[in-house]
Image (tube, rainbow, N blue to C red; front, side):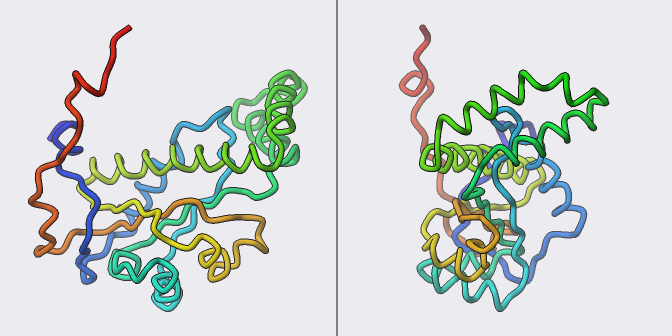
Length: 209
């Protein structure tokens, strides 16, 4: 199938088959694809947590309005932003750029200044919003990659972020939960898989200027 057929095939799964699990290779490929997601400046101001532990997932279900996807999917992916995005994160990124591209760190002084200027200008509240947006870009990449690989997914916002922070100990790690995705394989009796996808027509959604 081409990409359009794959995206028609995907939907937000309501009922996963708990007996069907992703292979290690499938999970690795999805995470590798998500790593390559677009991110402003390439900074990636978030962390991706893969939750496998059944006991932890039961605790998370309790702060996710009891949604079964949290426990029945093969894996639960939590995107968490850094709560104190600062110049140290930028320095770490610049060191990564210098090492990856085999250039002297001094050559990145101008770029580093621009990124640090953005972080400092936005402040704590602004970087929280900005980092969350970057996490959502990564979520979109994960959902698309999953569809391409015939892996089901369900993006989820219906959870208590503070509850996730508590269960996963995120606050102590300088992180805060932003959005969640359950990944796995649809149950044969999930009726939503047969529902036609409803989207605005191109003529209404897109305006050419």
